[in-house]
Amino acid sequence: MQQPRRIIKSTEATNLADILERVLDKGIVIAGDIRIQLADVELLNIRIRLLISSVEKAKEIGICWWEQDSYLSPKAKESELEKENKELERKIEFLETQLLAAKNK
View 1 (cartoon, rainbow, N blue to C red):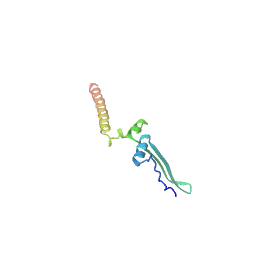
View 2 (tube, rainbow, N blue to C red):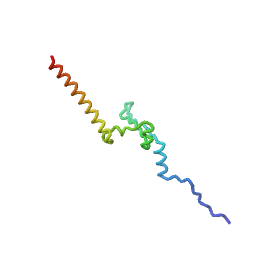
View 3 (cartoon, one colour):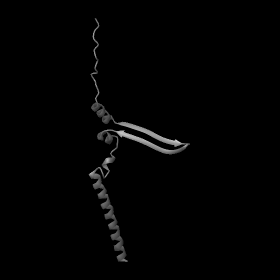
View 4 (spheres, rainbow, N blue to C red):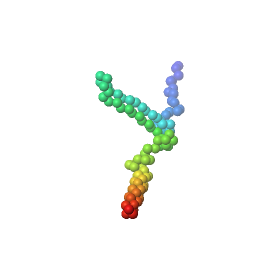
């Protein structure tokens, strides 16, 4: 009599959450180019560069553009306003010195 076949299951099954955690932890880069030419005339050239990672990993490799974007970060908006205020104060000081110099002539 034959033994019934057993179904072998993997003990290390990987689910979507595990895969996502690994990708975010390590990061993944997807790059590609799309080029459309007609008779040696380039009509369209698209370069695609995509980086998927966690915020911590992105900061670790030196990518943190969202911190300087005033639409995404209130700190960046405050920073832009501070820069604008300093620039305006500098211009006012310059104009005041010009005005005093003109009066003293």
